[in-house]
Image (tube, rainbow, N blue to C red; front, side, top):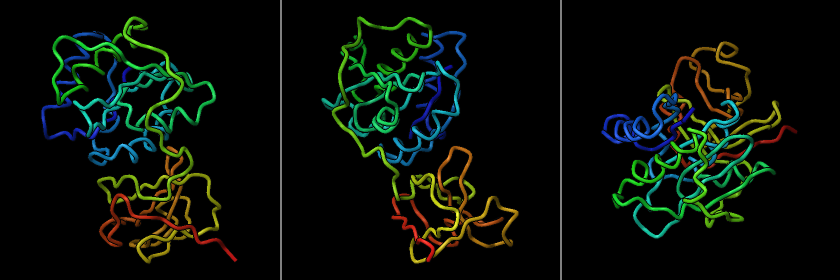
Amino acid sequence: MIVLLTDFGTRDPYVGQLKARLAEHAPGQLVVDLLHEVPVFNAHAGAHLLAAFAPVFPPGSVFLAVVDPGVGTPRGALVAAAGGRWFVGPDNGLLSVVTARHADARLWRITWRPEALSATFHGRDLFAQVAAEIARGEFPADKLAATERPHVEFDAGDLARVVYVDHYGNAWTGLRNIARDARVAVRGSSFRHAESFGFVGRGEGFWFVNSVGLVELAVNRGSAAGVYGLTVGDPVQLVRPN
């Protein structure tokens, strides 16, 4: 299984080209479109989303992760193995959180470059081909060199910011495992905990732990982003109970 996480969006031709290359080099492999709306250019948000999503997928899954504003520059390219899963993407911090959270993590630099390599689409021309080989069970040792750590590393602890806003207007944060009696404050508004939407009144804001373990801010039958003006990058504070 190849799992795609990108900031490509779905209006443009990039996802289609990426999947065509995977079909060419890994025919018969299931390709899952996990998320193509990672906040654009935001590898930091993408790193926390990737780390949250990965455990939901079966061991052996290959994550092709591309949020790559430095494409075409000398920034590096990585393959990582962590938690029984594989990750392929740029060395800009995108893979650093998921690897730091697993003691068994191993990393390799992608030293190979194809003859035809677009300066602006390494997702298709470089990362997709390496991910396809791994998904076929053919580890591309001749294209890689082992390394101890990424060049770019983000703090692997919780991120007290909004990292994603879904189409419902729910604001995902990089927080995990907080006390249920804590309040979460952002942009001057405070949210109490509820297990799910139906436990608060219509139009009421609250926070809950979502299906991948992240603290999420929501409004029952409404948009938290719209009501409270929440956007990606907003700092989030925990208000401890007295």
